[in-house]
Length: 205
Ligand SMILES: Cc1cc2nc3c(=O)[nH]c(=O)nc-3n(C[C@H](O)[C@H](O)[C@H](O)COP(=O)(O)O)c2cc1C
Image 1 (cartoon, rainbow, N blue to C red):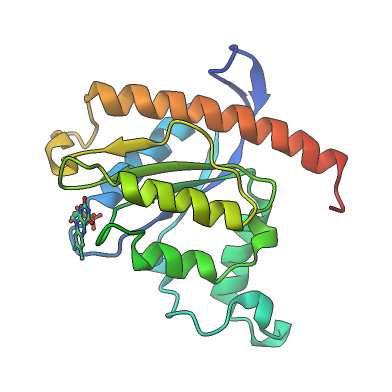
Image 2: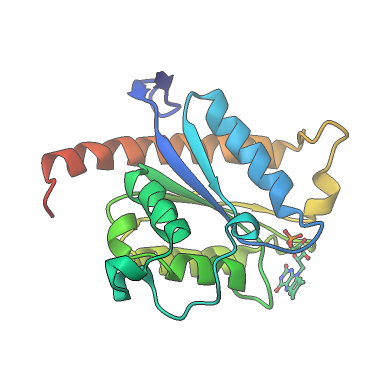
């Protein structure tokens, strides 16, 4: 399906994306934020695989899959790695715990080889209960994803007082979030489409 990008209004082929959540907490706010972002992406014709550590339940890291023998890789890990490898880009929806990226997010990402993320952009969305909006975590995720070879697109969306953005229908009408997510998706589309062309041009690097 063709999707119309926000950058320059140029048509691009729809993107195949993975969205990773950073919280497994009971009654987490992250699920609502992730749903909103994924609905905005789907509305533009993009396919979004939600990778939820609460459902996928990866153990605390003992060996990443690239350190294991192929026969020792559990199916859930190979299936998740396949989705990441086939993706055109990554969306991280994360809280901040103790002024750092939460363990569910860092543990999840550490299971997979950098090669699965390399040359694909990441869009970051953080949130928090307070006014600081997870901005410290957002900076750390830039470093983390850079280490995995995934450039983080500009204009991360950082949402303060996330519990106050709830509306009865589950959708937000907060201008900062609506406008920020729209801009972020436009940036992700631009980079993901550009890097997809480069990966096709240089398939063996
Ligand atoms: C262990 C823990 C540490 C936290 N540390 C921070 C923090 O450093 N910065 C912040 O803005 N909020 C912090 N909070 C509050 C979170 O922003 C808030 O609980 C948020 O809703 C967590 O996301 P979740 O509901 O999706 O789990 C912390 C919460 C917990 C449980």
